[in-house]
Amino acid sequence: MRQPYELSIAVRYLRTRSAHSFISFISAVSMVGIALAVAVLIIVLSVMNGFENELQQRILGMVSDASIVGYKGPFVDWQEAREHVLVRDDVEAAAPYVEGLAMAVHGEGIAGVTVRGVDPSLESGVSTIETVMTSGDFGALAPGTFNVVIGAQLAKLLGVGVGDEIMLVLAEGRVTLAGLLPRHRTFTVAGVFDAGMYEYDRGLVFVSFDDASKLFSTDGQATGLRLATKDLYSSRDIATAAAKELVAEGFAANYYIDDWRTVHYTFFRSIQLQKTMLFVILSLVVAVAAFNIISTLMMVVRDKRGDIAILRSVGTTQRSVMAMFASQGTMIGVVGTALGVLLALLFCWQIGNIVDFLQWVFDVDLLSAEVYYLDSLPAQVRPLEVLEIGGMALALAVLATFYPALSAARQPPAEALRYE
Image (cartoon, rainbow, N blue to C red; front, side, top):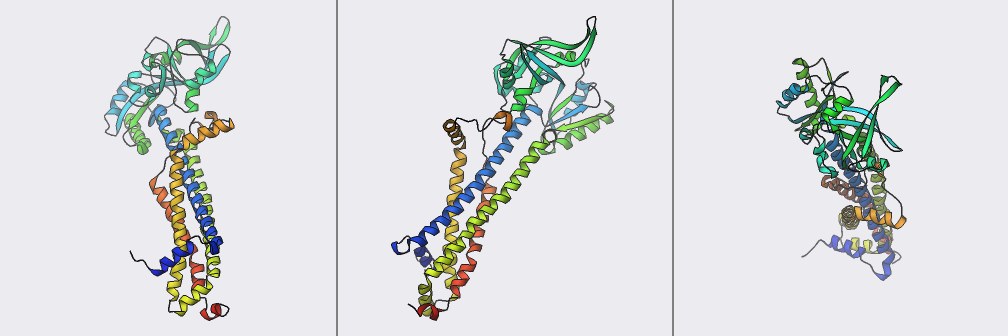
């Protein structure tokens, strides 16, 4: 196929020739610079996306979409309130719970935990706890059995497994002949779960609803209702509307609302802030790499002054000369951007193996669950972000060709040929 002669000349200038190997070398360096900058930006944002998505999924699996919590006391008549909430079309499931704080003790091991009393038959509708069980049975949390399901990190800390006993000690005391003693109860470990999030694996334990009610003296009443909603991002509004209906029906004087974003607002806000700052900073790196094209093309223009003068002498217009060098810079940007996108996709595809290899080589724990809440490095490539980054890199590359192309077009042919 025939192609414009301006493009043919631009392609020839990019080819490696012994007499002009330095020009080709710096062109290749410009391509590599753009490729690395684009790849780094895509990889970093993809890792942040993966971290946000993984954190969101694991949080939702443990805390539910939203909660309606009794204000200053237990949730009275929770059975009728639950039936009333389930009438709403935007609520998929509702489950009662009793929650409080305690100390888990076994031997010399001790840890502060949140104790959550649940009904296993209802809990599956609002959480994914049953899917992350590694041993034992979540359904073993039957009333009166005083069984407990704990996280893998807590089991490791206390040195217990299924069948062992732990003691839950409350901060509340009771008066006895021996004085004021803390309330406590021995529970049998009936299961261990691994949510993959340190906060829950280390600090959350499940018991049956009735056993928790006895432990925290709620007289069979619930701390609140956990909801699963049809619209995840409207869960707070849905829970608020449901709570107002409960107040209007006279179930209680007031409630307050928790949702998955409010409970972990700091996490998600910090992720968004980091993504924004990293995008701005790494975009400057892409800009620096793209504007390396200016120096590359200026050297090409200086080296090709004689060629430019001859072309102008045989009738080539200034517009055609500009098109030659603009095409050359654009090709550098296109090739560099394409290589960067491919490199980023390959890296994100194998990021888990890369991290494992680095940890094995350097014998370090790069992803401590205690620090990063997750024990693996996820990556989520979003096509729209890839298109935005690629488009930005190409736009900067094209913009960088303007001054060198204009400089080449303005070269006076007579001056350039005087010394040829």
